[in-house]
Image 1 (cartoon, rainbow, N blue to C red):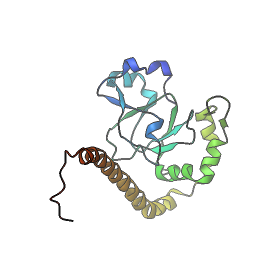
Image 2: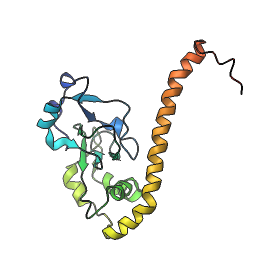
Image 3: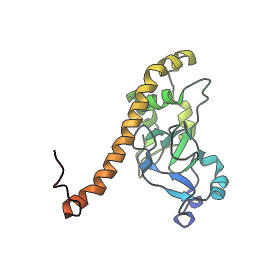
Length: 193
């Protein structure tokens, strides 16, 4: 589970350090890293139960419930801390592949199971998220079958991640060039199309 709200406040933010994961970072299958708030490494160590690492799966349990994303192995940081509205799952890779669990929770069945514990009065939330996550039945083939499955699926997942990263770069480039083009600060009249 993420730390209590009083453990991470705006007053504890620093310009650089350990990034804090919020719901804004969990919109797709993988952690999105446009920008972060940070806390010091010392502060993060005091919140060590909320530290997460590549291949951990992060869930939102309050607010935009149903968000599930994995920290990719090629993430920008080696460690993160989750905010108070998140909780995480760390897989024993001798029994289950994190990608398998991630895709299960993005399936219709996985979302149904996850959201079946939701409370919709006030701010939508999942009651006792860590306890209820353990109750969700996960159809689990033997690890050998998961490894065979991964040979087919992981290249597709990697292509998805690569395309998402490229889309982010292109969007940033567009956002930087478009105002210059519109204002006339960038002259393209000599470009031969």
